[in-house]
Each structure stands twice: as structure tokens, then as C-alpha cells.
Image 1: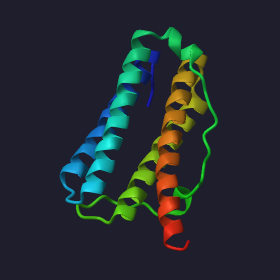
Image 2: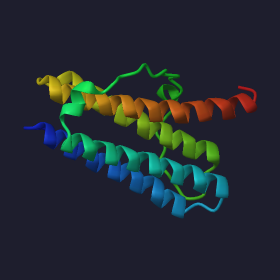
Image 3: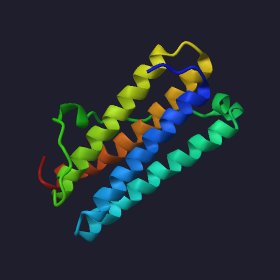
Length: 153
């Protein structure tokens, strides 16, 4: 993937966020359990927030330099799980596992792209997105961790 401008990077990230939101929206439509449907819809909304944030950054690129990074704890739960494909009717914990792995992959992609970027503004956009994906990963890992603790793990 080669990006010639910061706008190219932001457009790529917007497309990725739209795809992620659509994944969660479609999964919500295929589920029958209210709690799972609500969780998936909530996460689709999170992805839509990222889409709006990116569009705002694209229109106000000076904000890229003033973005405040924060430390996001990495529980590393997803690092030890195998990839799973989403199937309608999966259990709650399996859906959380699928979501964790999706967010982990997005985080790793943006982190690698940030490391490979040559221009600081482009590096910052990738780093912003990596942090946002790290927050998502942490959210699902925490849900998974809580579930597993209830199971005696």
C-alpha cells in the first residue's frame, strides 16, 4: 500500500472504519440474543464515531499535531487466541473473541504503517488510528477477561 498524501491515509482509515462498522451492524442483524445485538450495535456506533473523527481530521489537519495520545493497557488476551470466523448464532464469548482478533489486526496494521511512514504527519495519523484500535482491543479483552473470571479462569 502506498500513500502519496495524508488525505490518502485518512481515506484508507475511513474506509476501514466503515467496513468495521458494517461488520458489526450485519452481525447484529444476524443475532437473536438481545444482549449480543446491543453489544454489536454499540460497537458499530464506536466505529462510526471513528469514521466521523477521521472526517473531522481530514477537514482540520492541524488537529493531527495536537492529538493527545494516552497510554492504553494491553491485556494481551487476543495474542494467545486463534483467529475465528464470525458465524450467526455464535456464543457471546466467541463473538467477543472474533471482535478482539479483528481489533488486534487493525491495531497491528496501523502500528506497522506508522513505523513505515516517512513523514511525521502521516506517522501521526497512523499512530492515532493505532491508539483508537488499541482502545477497542482493550475494551473487548476486558469483556473477555471479565467473562473468563466468572468462569473461574
